Image 1 (tube, rainbow, N blue to C red):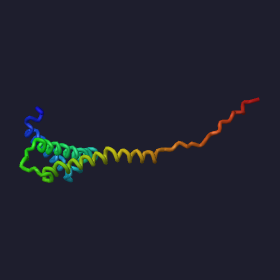
Image 2: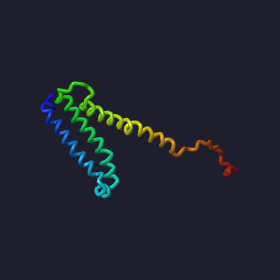
Image 3: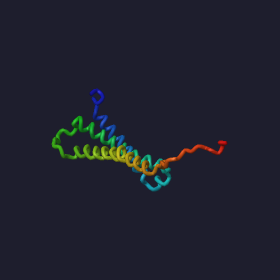
Image 4: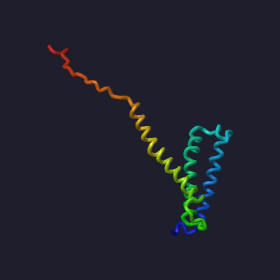
Amino acid sequence: SSLFAESPQYASFFGLFTLILLCILSFVYFPWISERLLWREYHLLTAYLGPFCLLIAFIHVYISWKYDYYSHHQYLFNLKFFSMFLPLIVLVLSFIIYGIIHPIIKLIQWNRTRPRKNKTSTIITKDTSLLP
């Protein structure tokens, strides 16, 4: 409780931090910037910074919602609710797809394409060439 005693400052910090990260992310899509990036840098920025920004924005809205800054709107389906609910759906679905389904599909593909050991039986015979 004492951590969020001055919660408006935390909410505005997360909001500004998200805005700065989204500005950085938007620069990646300019052609004159994206063509100078290596593939790993481009993939890192587009694949990981976007969901991270969404998570930080979710925290920003959660803090604003938890401490009821907008108490004059009490009905459920308002803009504040959707700004909290839709990012949560995106975060949960991306976790399900990339955290659960994608590794299972890669495991199934690996299982199908791995080299199989030939299970033909070999007959062991005595070497009779040295016998008298």
